Length: 171
Image 1 (tube, helix red, strand yellow):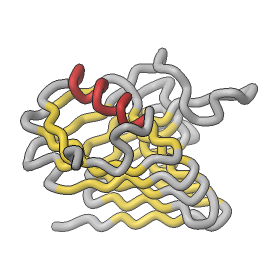
Image 2: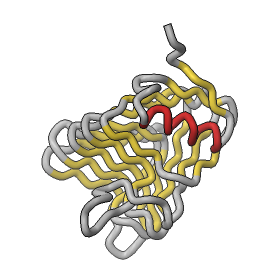
Image 3: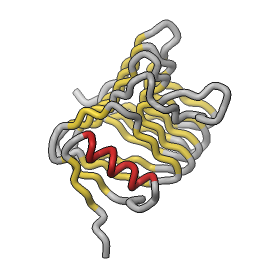
Image 4: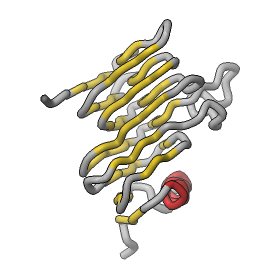
């Protein structure tokens, strides 16, 4: 029986592990952090299931504006989401913090579409469209911390066409 849990301790190991999830080799597996990680690329799940166990550490996802688009990449208006789950994907979070930061040029913090679900700790958008977006029936995002959005047309949370968002701030 192959291992279903894999440890990652830095951004390079995380990138390699996410590629294996994307290829289907580690679909349904758990990535367990062994240190705090700053990740400067988007996390994209298309028709995949992944658990990230932060194991008491913090994973900060803060992609740059020159990252490859992962929202409608083949359309005339492709965009970037720091965390994107599409086509019945599921991103589950255990063990602590997944902090998502969408800076200028990154349209969304967490985006779930087409029956997908995602979880995050805190989500911040500075200059994008929505910090958290759920599009389509069966799509959902759950945030266990704070959501903030800055910018002229930015919104904290946006649901469309049956999407659902749950923000459970604990005090």
